[in-house]
Image (cartoon, rainbow, N blue to C red; front, side, top):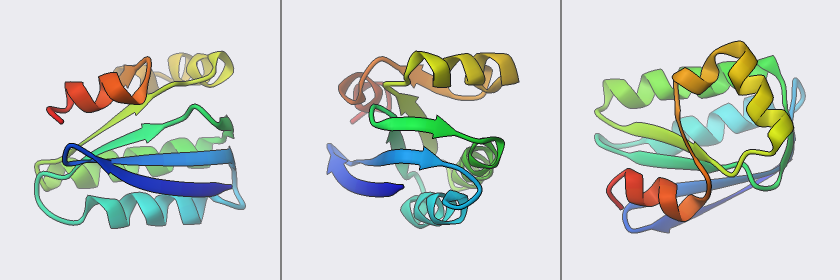
Amino acid sequence: MHITEQALNGVVVLHPVGRIDSGSTGEFEGVLMSAIGEDGTRIVVDMAELSYISSAGLRSLLVAAKAARTKRGSIALCAMAPSIRALFDISGFSSLFAIHADAASAVAALGG
C-alpha cells in the first residue's frame, strides 16, 4: 500500500493505493491519525485506487473518525469500488461515514 496526501480548499485528501490489510493497517492508521492534527481537521479518504480493505482497515477508519470527532473534525470517504462499498454496507460502516462519488463532491460536502 502507498498513500499520497494533498490539501484541497482546507481539506486533507488521502489517496491510499493497493490493499489495506493486516500488513499495512498500522501505516494507514498512522497516516490517518497524523492527518487529524489540529481542531476542526476535515479529511477525505479517496478510495479510487484501493483494491481491498480488511476488517483491521475498517477498525482504523473507525478509530480515526472517533479521534477526529473529539477534535471537532470529520472524515468522509469517496470513490469506492463496488466490492468495497458492499463490504461497508454489509458491515454497517456505510451508516458511520459520509460516502461520496468522488473527491470533489466529498471536499465540497465538508465545506472545502
